[in-house]
Image 1 (cartoon, rainbow, N blue to C red):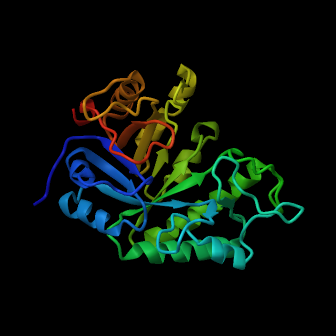
Image 2: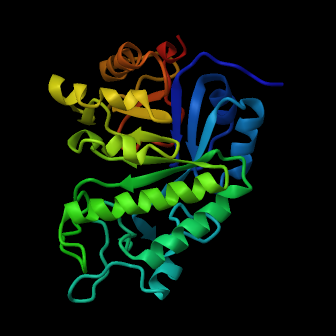
Length: 295
Protein backbone atom coordinates (compact mmCIF):
# COMPACT_ATOMS: atom_id res chain seq x y z
CA UNK A 1 0.00 0.00 0.00
CA UNK A 2 1.30 3.45 -0.86
CA UNK A 3 1.96 5.84 2.00
CA UNK A 4 1.77 9.59 1.67
CA UNK A 5 3.30 12.49 3.55
CA UNK A 6 3.21 16.23 3.52
CA UNK A 7 6.76 16.47 4.77
CA UNK A 8 9.58 18.27 2.99
CA UNK A 9 12.47 16.51 4.71
CA UNK A 10 15.56 15.12 2.98
CA UNK A 11 17.16 11.97 4.43
CA UNK A 12 20.90 12.16 3.84
CA UNK A 13 21.97 8.69 4.95
CA UNK A 14 25.34 7.61 3.55
CA UNK A 15 27.22 7.05 6.78
CA UNK A 16 27.06 3.92 8.93
CA UNK A 17 24.84 0.91 8.05
CA UNK A 18 21.08 1.38 8.23
CA UNK A 19 19.44 0.68 11.57
CA UNK A 20 16.19 -1.26 12.15
CA UNK A 21 13.14 0.95 11.82
CA UNK A 22 14.83 3.71 9.85
CA UNK A 23 13.19 2.80 6.56
CA UNK A 24 9.73 2.85 8.14
CA UNK A 25 10.50 6.26 9.62
CA UNK A 26 11.78 7.52 6.27
CA UNK A 27 8.64 6.32 4.48
CA UNK A 28 6.53 8.32 6.91
CA UNK A 29 8.53 11.53 6.94
CA UNK A 30 10.87 12.22 4.00
CA UNK A 31 10.48 13.57 0.48
CA UNK A 32 13.95 12.63 -0.74
CA UNK A 33 16.63 10.16 0.37
CA UNK A 34 20.33 9.68 -0.39
CA UNK A 35 21.62 6.18 0.41
CA UNK A 36 24.76 4.19 -0.22
CA UNK A 37 24.78 2.74 -3.77
CA UNK A 38 24.85 -0.87 -2.54
CA UNK A 39 21.67 -0.36 -0.47
CA UNK A 40 19.55 -1.39 -3.43
CA UNK A 41 17.03 -3.37 -1.38
CA UNK A 42 16.41 -0.36 0.84
CA UNK A 43 15.94 1.84 -2.23
CA UNK A 44 13.45 -0.63 -3.66
CA UNK A 45 11.46 -0.68 -0.44
CA UNK A 46 11.32 3.11 -0.28
CA UNK A 47 10.15 3.39 -3.88
CA UNK A 48 7.54 0.65 -3.46
CA UNK A 49 6.03 2.36 -0.43
CA UNK A 50 6.58 5.90 -1.67
CA UNK A 51 6.76 6.19 -5.46
CA UNK A 52 6.75 9.97 -5.01
CA UNK A 53 9.99 9.93 -3.01
CA UNK A 54 13.21 10.70 -4.90
CA UNK A 55 15.81 8.10 -3.89
CA UNK A 56 19.41 8.66 -4.89
CA UNK A 57 22.63 6.67 -4.66
CA UNK A 58 25.69 8.45 -3.30
CA UNK A 59 28.73 8.57 -5.58
CA UNK A 60 31.93 10.59 -5.27
CA UNK A 61 33.00 12.42 -8.43
CA UNK A 62 36.49 13.32 -7.32
CA UNK A 63 38.04 10.53 -5.23
CA UNK A 64 38.60 6.82 -4.93
CA UNK A 65 38.99 5.17 -1.53
CA UNK A 66 41.62 2.51 -0.83
CA UNK A 67 39.53 0.92 1.95
CA UNK A 68 36.42 0.18 -0.11
CA UNK A 69 35.63 -3.37 -1.26
CA UNK A 70 34.22 -3.56 -4.78
CA UNK A 71 30.84 -4.73 -3.49
CA UNK A 72 30.46 -1.68 -1.22
CA UNK A 73 31.94 1.21 -3.16
CA UNK A 74 30.82 4.83 -2.94
CA UNK A 75 33.46 5.90 -5.46
CA UNK A 76 32.53 5.62 -9.10
CA UNK A 77 35.56 3.42 -9.76
CA UNK A 78 37.55 1.23 -7.40
CA UNK A 79 40.90 2.38 -6.06
CA UNK A 80 42.51 -0.70 -7.58
CA UNK A 81 41.21 -0.01 -11.07
CA UNK A 82 42.03 3.69 -10.89
CA UNK A 83 45.58 2.99 -9.73
CA UNK A 84 46.14 0.24 -12.29
CA UNK A 85 45.01 2.45 -15.15
CA UNK A 86 46.93 5.52 -14.01
CA UNK A 87 43.86 7.53 -13.07
CA UNK A 88 45.03 8.68 -9.62
CA UNK A 89 46.49 12.17 -9.41
CA UNK A 90 50.17 12.44 -8.49
CA UNK A 91 52.48 15.18 -7.32
CA UNK A 92 55.69 16.12 -9.07
CA UNK A 93 57.59 13.64 -6.90
CA UNK A 94 55.23 10.80 -7.89
CA UNK A 95 53.28 10.69 -4.61
CA UNK A 96 49.55 10.05 -4.74
CA UNK A 97 47.34 12.93 -3.58
CA UNK A 98 45.51 11.88 -0.40
CA UNK A 99 42.84 14.21 0.94
CA UNK A 100 44.04 15.81 4.16
CA UNK A 101 40.79 15.53 6.16
CA UNK A 102 39.62 12.17 4.81
CA UNK A 103 42.30 9.46 5.15
CA UNK A 104 42.18 6.84 2.42
CA UNK A 105 40.52 9.20 -0.10
CA UNK A 106 42.76 9.80 -3.10
CA UNK A 107 42.21 12.48 -5.71
CA UNK A 108 41.22 11.06 -9.07
CA UNK A 109 42.30 12.51 -12.41
CA UNK A 110 38.91 14.07 -13.14
CA UNK A 111 40.58 15.93 -16.01
CA UNK A 112 41.41 12.67 -17.82
CA UNK A 113 38.88 11.91 -20.61
CA UNK A 114 39.47 8.16 -20.21
CA UNK A 115 38.76 8.30 -16.47
CA UNK A 116 35.59 10.28 -17.07
CA UNK A 117 34.32 7.96 -19.78
CA UNK A 118 34.95 4.85 -17.69
CA UNK A 119 33.38 6.48 -14.59
CA UNK A 120 30.21 7.28 -16.53
CA UNK A 121 30.08 3.80 -18.04
CA UNK A 122 30.47 2.08 -14.67
CA UNK A 123 28.05 4.26 -12.69
CA UNK A 124 25.34 4.19 -15.36
CA UNK A 125 25.59 0.41 -15.63
CA UNK A 126 25.47 -0.02 -11.85
CA UNK A 127 22.45 2.28 -11.47
CA UNK A 128 20.33 1.49 -14.52
CA UNK A 129 18.58 -1.64 -13.23
CA UNK A 130 18.08 -0.50 -9.64
CA UNK A 131 15.16 1.30 -7.99
CA UNK A 132 17.32 4.39 -7.47
CA UNK A 133 16.05 7.44 -9.36
CA UNK A 134 19.64 8.45 -10.01
CA UNK A 135 22.72 9.53 -8.10
CA UNK A 136 23.89 12.32 -5.85
CA UNK A 137 27.42 13.10 -7.04
CA UNK A 138 29.48 14.43 -4.15
CA UNK A 139 32.54 16.68 -4.31
CA UNK A 140 31.61 18.82 -7.27
CA UNK A 141 34.12 21.16 -5.66
CA UNK A 142 34.63 24.89 -6.11
CA UNK A 143 37.83 25.44 -4.13
CA UNK A 144 40.75 23.40 -2.80
CA UNK A 145 39.05 21.92 0.27
CA UNK A 146 41.38 18.95 0.70
CA UNK A 147 44.86 20.47 0.34
CA UNK A 148 45.46 19.28 -3.19
CA UNK A 149 48.00 22.11 -3.38
CA UNK A 150 47.52 22.84 -7.04
CA UNK A 151 48.97 22.81 -9.65
CA UNK A 152 48.68 19.09 -10.38
CA UNK A 153 49.69 17.78 -13.77
CA UNK A 154 47.77 19.81 -16.38
CA UNK A 155 45.49 21.53 -13.82
CA UNK A 156 47.01 24.87 -12.90
CA UNK A 157 44.57 26.16 -10.28
CA UNK A 158 41.08 25.81 -8.83
CA UNK A 159 39.52 27.63 -11.78
CA UNK A 160 40.98 25.03 -14.13
CA UNK A 161 39.72 22.23 -11.87
CA UNK A 162 36.21 23.73 -11.88
CA UNK A 163 36.30 23.88 -15.67
CA UNK A 164 37.15 20.18 -15.83
CA UNK A 165 34.32 19.37 -13.42
CA UNK A 166 31.92 21.39 -15.59
CA UNK A 167 32.68 19.01 -18.44
CA UNK A 168 32.56 15.94 -16.20
CA UNK A 169 29.18 16.84 -14.69
CA UNK A 170 27.71 17.29 -18.17
CA UNK A 171 29.05 13.87 -19.23
CA UNK A 172 27.67 12.17 -16.12
CA UNK A 173 24.30 13.87 -16.47
CA UNK A 174 23.94 12.98 -20.13
CA UNK A 175 24.90 9.37 -19.44
CA UNK A 176 22.43 8.97 -16.60
CA UNK A 177 19.59 10.69 -18.43
CA UNK A 178 20.16 8.31 -21.35
CA UNK A 179 19.38 5.33 -19.06
CA UNK A 180 16.38 7.05 -17.47
CA UNK A 181 18.13 8.30 -14.32
CA UNK A 182 18.88 11.74 -12.92
CA UNK A 183 22.01 13.46 -11.63
CA UNK A 184 21.96 15.69 -8.56
CA UNK A 185 25.49 16.96 -7.83
CA UNK A 186 26.60 18.47 -4.54
CA UNK A 187 27.30 21.83 -6.15
CA UNK A 188 29.76 23.55 -3.82
CA UNK A 189 29.53 27.32 -3.45
CA UNK A 190 27.42 27.89 -6.55
CA UNK A 191 26.66 31.40 -5.25
CA UNK A 192 30.22 32.44 -6.17
CA UNK A 193 29.88 31.81 -9.91
CA UNK A 194 26.89 33.08 -11.92
CA UNK A 195 25.14 30.26 -13.75
CA UNK A 196 26.96 27.47 -11.90
CA UNK A 197 23.88 26.18 -10.08
CA UNK A 198 21.68 26.14 -13.18
CA UNK A 199 24.30 24.40 -15.30
CA UNK A 200 25.16 21.70 -12.78
CA UNK A 201 21.50 21.11 -11.85
CA UNK A 202 20.33 20.76 -15.43
CA UNK A 203 20.38 16.94 -15.36
CA UNK A 204 17.87 16.43 -12.56
CA UNK A 205 18.57 18.88 -9.78
CA UNK A 206 21.18 20.07 -7.32
CA UNK A 207 22.25 19.62 -3.71
CA UNK A 208 23.75 22.41 -1.58
CA UNK A 209 25.33 20.92 1.53
CA UNK A 210 26.07 24.35 3.02
CA UNK A 211 22.88 26.30 2.49
CA UNK A 212 22.65 29.50 4.59
CA UNK A 213 25.81 28.58 6.49
CA UNK A 214 29.33 27.24 6.15
CA UNK A 215 29.56 25.27 9.38
CA UNK A 216 27.76 24.32 12.56
CA UNK A 217 28.53 27.66 14.19
CA UNK A 218 28.82 29.87 11.13
CA UNK A 219 25.64 31.05 9.44
CA UNK A 220 26.07 33.38 6.47
CA UNK A 221 25.37 37.10 6.54
CA UNK A 222 22.24 38.37 4.83
CA UNK A 223 23.80 39.16 1.45
CA UNK A 224 25.53 35.77 1.21
CA UNK A 225 22.40 33.89 2.25
CA UNK A 226 20.25 35.74 -0.26
CA UNK A 227 22.73 34.80 -3.00
CA UNK A 228 21.72 31.15 -2.44
CA UNK A 229 17.96 31.63 -2.57
CA UNK A 230 17.66 31.06 -6.34
CA UNK A 231 18.80 27.46 -5.76
CA UNK A 232 15.29 26.66 -4.49
CA UNK A 233 13.84 27.39 -7.91
CA UNK A 234 15.41 24.54 -9.81
CA UNK A 235 16.06 23.31 -12.38
CA UNK A 236 14.96 19.88 -11.22
CA UNK A 237 14.84 18.86 -7.58
CA UNK A 238 16.67 21.16 -5.18
CA UNK A 239 17.95 19.56 -1.96
CA UNK A 240 19.40 21.93 0.62
CA UNK A 241 21.02 21.35 4.01
CA UNK A 242 21.48 23.99 6.68
CA UNK A 243 24.39 23.22 9.04
CA UNK A 244 23.09 22.64 12.55
CA UNK A 245 25.42 21.52 15.32
CA UNK A 246 22.38 20.26 17.20
CA UNK A 247 21.49 17.97 14.32
CA UNK A 248 18.37 19.78 13.18
CA UNK A 249 16.46 18.76 16.27
CA UNK A 250 15.49 15.17 17.01
CA UNK A 251 12.49 12.90 17.00
CA UNK A 252 11.53 14.52 20.29
CA UNK A 253 11.38 17.97 18.73
CA UNK A 254 13.57 20.83 17.52
CA UNK A 255 16.13 21.95 20.10
CA UNK A 256 18.26 24.36 18.13
CA UNK A 257 17.48 27.39 16.01
CA UNK A 258 19.51 26.90 12.77
CA UNK A 259 17.29 24.06 11.57
CA UNK A 260 14.11 26.07 12.04
CA UNK A 261 15.72 29.19 10.57
CA UNK A 262 16.66 27.26 7.43
CA UNK A 263 13.23 25.64 7.18
CA UNK A 264 11.54 29.04 7.42
CA UNK A 265 13.73 30.33 4.56
CA UNK A 266 12.98 27.19 2.57
CA UNK A 267 9.24 27.91 2.80
CA UNK A 268 9.34 31.71 2.51
CA UNK A 269 11.63 31.87 -0.51
CA UNK A 270 10.89 28.52 -2.17
CA UNK A 271 7.27 27.83 -1.33
CA UNK A 272 8.11 24.39 0.02
CA UNK A 273 9.45 23.06 -3.31
CA UNK A 274 12.40 20.67 -3.13
CA UNK A 275 13.65 18.95 0.02
CA UNK A 276 15.31 20.30 3.15
CA UNK A 277 17.39 19.03 6.04
CA UNK A 278 19.54 20.36 8.87
CA UNK A 279 22.39 18.29 10.31
CA UNK A 280 25.79 18.59 11.89
CA UNK A 281 29.01 18.12 9.93
CA UNK A 282 29.11 14.68 8.28
CA UNK A 283 26.10 13.75 10.44
CA UNK A 284 24.75 11.23 7.95
CA UNK A 285 24.19 8.12 10.05
CA UNK A 286 20.69 8.61 11.47
CA UNK A 287 17.22 10.03 10.77
CA UNK A 288 17.31 13.76 11.64
CA UNK A 289 13.84 15.22 11.90
CA UNK A 290 11.69 17.68 13.81
CA UNK A 291 7.91 18.15 13.66
CA UNK A 292 7.92 21.35 11.60
CA UNK A 293 9.37 19.39 8.66
CA UNK A 294 5.97 17.72 8.28
CA UNK A 295 3.91 20.89 8.63
